[in-house]
Image 1: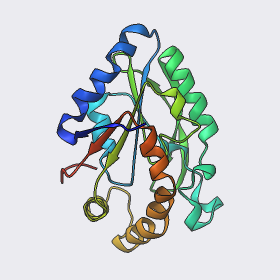
Image 2: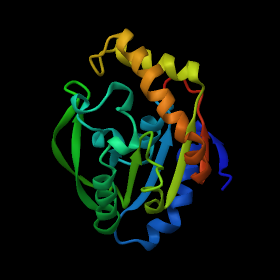
Image 3: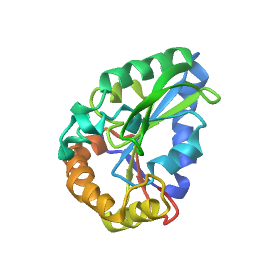
Image 4: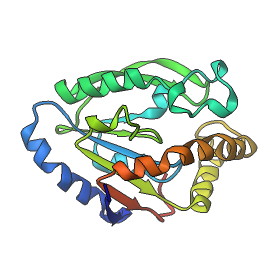
Length: 204
């Protein structure tokens, strides 16, 4: 599949337009999947689409149970549960999802999420994994340059969002997040209906 390329500012309208037919035909939730590298703008785009957002980060493993360089691997995440949660959300419009903390680096309970006006978004680096892709009505891949993404990542840590030092953030970016995503980027991009080009400095 060669996805249609759109600019970030035009992406929400294009995505919701692509989802419109499914929204009118479904009793449960219309699912939109958004993949992209760290700090490419997935979360910002998701918030512009729906109030119901599931992050693949919440399905990460407890960090203390895995090797440092394996923390972002899809096989280390609980994709089986994510698949079930998305299926339930798609069918009923509601599901329970885990809550994963970047402060404690482990799961910290669960929450109930409900589709917002019939729409829900799953965003994360592995949102378009082969196990999950068939569940979405619209699949999106967000692209941004490595330098711009690192600038956003550093700004996030300097703001204290995750409690990481800039040194730890750089190590995670270079040794974990980037090489892991690079292994899957071509595959994920090929599955997308829309390719979103993002050079907006205000997005995460």
